[in-house]
Length: 58
Image: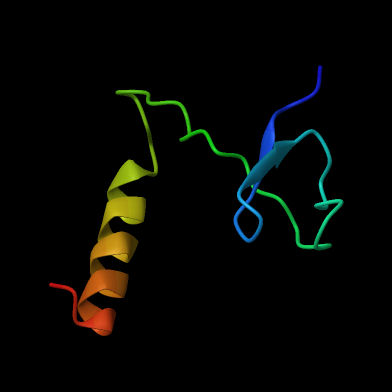
C-alpha cells in the first residue's frame, strides 16, 4: 500500500519519497494517530513546549 506524500517546497502531492520536480524529500501530510493510552505523549508535549519557548513563541 502506498502512502500519499507532500512536497513542502512545490506544494504538490506524490507517492514518491523524493519530489520529482525539485528533488526535496517529501513528508506525510497526515497527523499521527491519536491514542488515549499514548505512553510517550507527555514527553512529546514537554519537548514541543520547550521548542516554542526557545523560539520565543510563548
